[in-house]
Amino acid sequence: MSTVLESLNTSLHQAMTRDERVYMIGEDLMDPYGGAFKVTRGLSTEFPERVLTTPVSEAGIVGLAGGMALRGLRPVVEIMFGDFITLAADQLINGITKFHWMYNQQVNVPIVVRLPMGGRRGYGPTHSQTLEKLFLGVPGLRVLAPSALGNPGDLLERAILEDDGPVLFVENKLLYLQDIIDPSAEAEFVLISNTTTETYAPTYSLTLRDSPPPILTLTAYGYMAELARAAVLKLAYEHEIFCEMIVLTQLSPFESKTLLPVPLLTSIQRTQRLLTIEEGGITMGWGAEVVARASEAVGDALQSATRVAARDIPIPASVSMEEMVLPSVDTIVQAAKKMV
Amino acid sequence: MPDDQALYRGLYRIRRFEETVLNEFSSGLFYGTTHTYLGQEANAVGVLDHLQKEDIVFSNHRCHGHFIAYGGDPRALFAELMGKKTGVTGGRGGSQHIHWKNFYSNGILGSTVPVGTGAALAEKFKDSNAVTIIFLGDGTLGQGVVYESLNLASLWDVPVLFVVENNRIAQTTPIELAVAGEIPPRFNAFGIPTTELNTSDVCEILPTARELIAEIRGEAAPRALILHTHRFGPHSKGDDTRPEEEIKRLHAKHDPIKIHAERLDKNARTIIETEIDAQISEAFDLAKNDPLPAYI
Ligand SMILES: Cc1ncc(C[n+]2csc(CCOP(=O)(O)OP(=O)(O)O)c2C)c(N)n1
Ligand SMILES: [Mg+2]
Image (tube, each protein chain N blue to C red):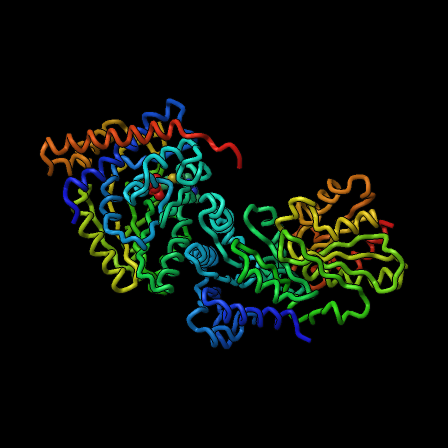
């Protein structure tokens, strides 16, 4: 049994071992510190030449990594807190994600930018956000977010070694210490991992073992998948509402042909009800796009849809207020009960 | 050292290309925008003449002169400005966003500086011995990411030459309103040795650039070259806010073509000019007849 943090750390070691073109770039990466959240621990000891601990220059290091990628290396950038990605937004949006297309497909930019995101650590308004929604839909950019399901490290390793385009890799901070949930060892849920030809990032579907047919589809990613899983249990045992849950690991781009991952569509067609759960702010969020796509894809088969997300205010530092802003197991349960 | 005739060819080729662009913009054949290199030709020719095959150039919005001096095909650049399929980037990038071989440009001011620094660092890691040249204007010195990059380039001994083309103006804003203090200390503060030249004479730029590029290649460390220069044309097209007398004065005193022409006899000059005029007009005509992209 390993944690999400261990899984990610192991995969970084493996990626650097397997491919000499992989470089690790970020602030305070050197051992013994090994990065603010310790995801890069041990790398600077094992690969001193390929771990670059940097000045506090988010735009500079993301741009620099973009240039390294243009010239055939495979840099991985750690942004200490995902909130700081706004400083590098120009490098991503007006540069790195455009080079392949605007230079007429003559170049590739294989760069992974890792973003520790999310709240519930009391870090306050500028160190607790879930900002990836700002980057969803940016052409030429893949946005991935592992959860505790399956193999987060494998997802990261494939992004580093196999993806020839830019990737934002969103790591919720609360996931780091969670144990990984292995589908084959899962007792309460039937957990199925699905992949498509469009991406290497899997979509997971979960239903309670030996339960009646689900009447509601929940979809979530990252740490919200953990809360949603707890909500599914509560809904079943306390309210006799049975749900199917679909967990995405690729947030952007969406499937070009089917609009949404097929397991999600199939589930919506079965239950006719869709509840989206995300930690980012509700307005113009991931859930809004999922609901719009679900409606376009299944038409009248979608009877009702609801979004659970953070309120549109900054994340407060105080634990009591933080809880009032972010989605919780309770808010998910309440939203689900209203739908059936 | 290239001979005077070759240099004249290089300068005059850019001049004719850019004059054609400005003159023909009103005919509606070009689409979008342009920033001509008129008056600054000696910078591109003087700096890029020393490049080896593996060397890299990061250019900016004012990239036509850099591209042509790098060896880029005028027809492909005309075609790009017309949005044609045969353009440098197939009509996708337009005037400011081109890529060919080891030449890259981007229209976001300053954004190329970290990317170019990263490219240079990658080449250092790969032991390719390549030097990277990054062109930027005086106005671009207002961008913060430039200084993040200078810091990184110096900390990590990145083999890069920062070339500031100081034409003392950014679009319509004179340097007095945009750049505080002096330019060289901005580089010196990061420990980057800086050379300044105040000339439009390609024969003065050439040896200095050669020396700097050799130093960078030898030591794998950054250098800066500040070229005080003059923009003859509008910022883009027809948007010059400067008095006409000032432009006339610049032409009279600082024209790189005229300065270098003095070194050639009249006969040799006429031969070169006739040859290049024909080349450029042929390139233009070919591009004009090239097809627009039919799909995306
Ligand atoms: C980030 C950004 N801001 C503004 C512009 C618009 N713009 C294009 S060129 C220019 C002036 C640039 O001046 P300078 O760096 O001195 O270069 P020059 O045009 O003189 O060659 C401006 C403001 C831009 N392209 N990118
Ligand atoms: Mg200028």
